[in-house]
Image (tube, rainbow, N blue to C red; front, side, top):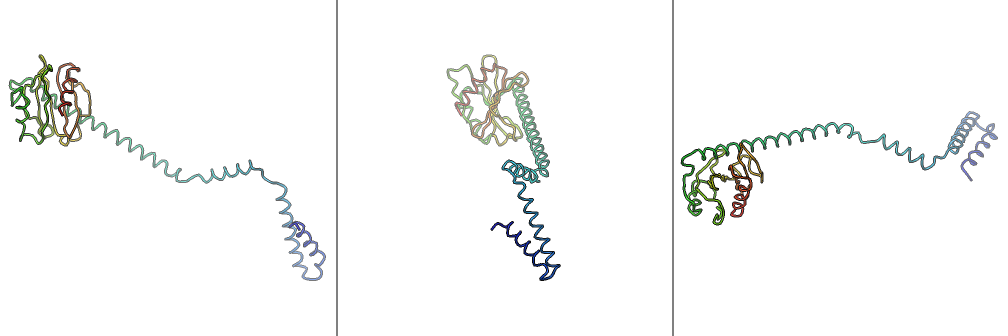
Length: 237
């Protein structure tokens, strides 16, 4: 028997028997039964369709949107801005350090051009120049075989950058003099060669690092000539 019908029969029974017992209790019981009947009848008047249910569920989900987004989104945005600014400043500082380093090496190259004795060891033989640096710098390096090329080794001397000793090799190409600086990468203070092609104060500059050594090729020869000498040095490394 349906619940509605059972409630109706119970309400009818209370009406018929209200004189047999407590009239107050019977009236209260009848009122509650009628209230339940009214609620049940009202509930059967409207049955939501699936579309309505989905709309209500979406509304509830939207009202429960994570509060942390509203509270922490500005914090995340500020943190991202700080990281971007820090990366930019770090990049600018790194570039500034590289420019300063290149400028210092160009100055040393110009000093060698102006000097009557640009090298401390004079020799066209790489087997003479390379051993001369032993004990004077804390690393060793290889020199390229220049036979068959347009370059001539003039000699070398000890150079310094950031108080770290390195080698400066002088090569001649026709009327041009080219300086090749070699330093340990750990002594560059964060500013070192990175396969860069630069022009500084009318001089062509090539730089790269390999096997903990950084190379800087500086001269007033053409870009093609410096690329060729750089290729010979890389092949010998």
